[in-house]
Length: 281
Image 1: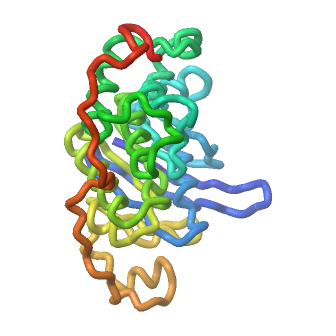
Image 2 (image 1 turned 90 degrees about the vertical axis):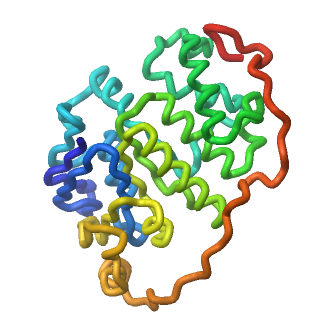
Image 3 (image 1 turned 45 degrees about the horizontal axis):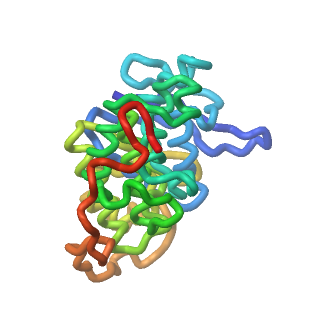
């Protein structure tokens, strides 16, 4: 589905963030990128959707050569790649629903997006996605009133509203507590399985990567030094990726059956004030 061949990113200073990356990601596979800070994980993800321009190499999503696109063709290709950000990238003054609907900006014209008027099918799907990610009660809340876990769920729903073929996930748990981190990773995994989505997840937490990814790729200094199953990630391989450490010491597992929101919420009304067919409040 996604193929990277000889992808290199070199900065004007001569420093290399990535060197000759070769990867193939099949449909439906959840792949975790691990490695120390500065290893090139975020750069690799951003090269895929061309937020960072690779210096050389080929990036192909199905039959589309991403590295050759520009202008409108690139914008259309980005519709197929949903991005979930570490810092959520929400507009704080907008409501949860408005932030989710912004996932359709690549499909609607300028004036409709400016006026925040979206087709009814997009509004209906946004309702459904917010219920699926556990936020039916928060539809009309401002984004800046949400917890970190809730904000990340909004980001996930927004990415899925694009109807992507591929999810690019950049450190989704970096700002979250351990329990919420597990819940967010589980949610991403479940949604990928439900929709047949492939995903590349840049993540620092090796334990979470082992629990929720089908495959792990280890980067060090911009090069792939490991590519295999989570069960193959031995302490020796972790030393190759990160350097010397006591990798056999692991924390006790924690109970995460409870939602990251300890308070209960009233049922939400399907009718949101100010949101009608063809528009978002």
